Length: 151
Image 1 (cartoon, helix red, strand yellow):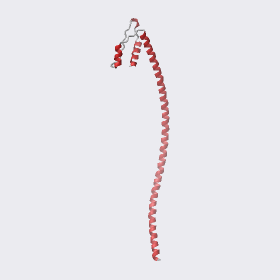
Image 2 (spheres, rainbow, N blue to C red; image 1 turned 180 degrees about the vertical axis):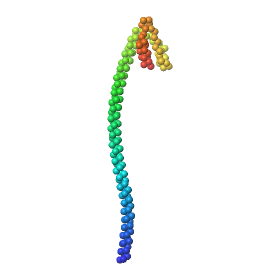
Image 3 (cartoon, helix red, strand yellow; image 1 turned 135 degrees about the horizontal axis):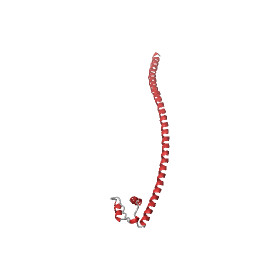
């Protein structure tokens, strides 16, 4: 039995040495895991902080967008009102030109229309004042502006 007992003790010693090496390996692995766990905790805290900053940034962007949208809407409405007013002024100006032309105080030169249609140079209105019925400077400017608008 001495041989059997010696064999069992040697087997137990080998198992004990194997267990010691295995426990050392597990201890190192647990140390790495603990260190990684702390890093993971720090990473989670950093992620939570970043997501909170992102939420704040998104809310600020949303507010800035709403403000910009309101301002842009006001600008568009103002532009529409100005456009309508300008169209009305143009219509009134064209009516005034039609009335002046109907009275025969403006003679149009067909060559001016051909030059403006070609786009080579700006049309120069041709005026032929008729004595006392000469146009005022304001009328000439209005006619010039209306002709330029048609280009």
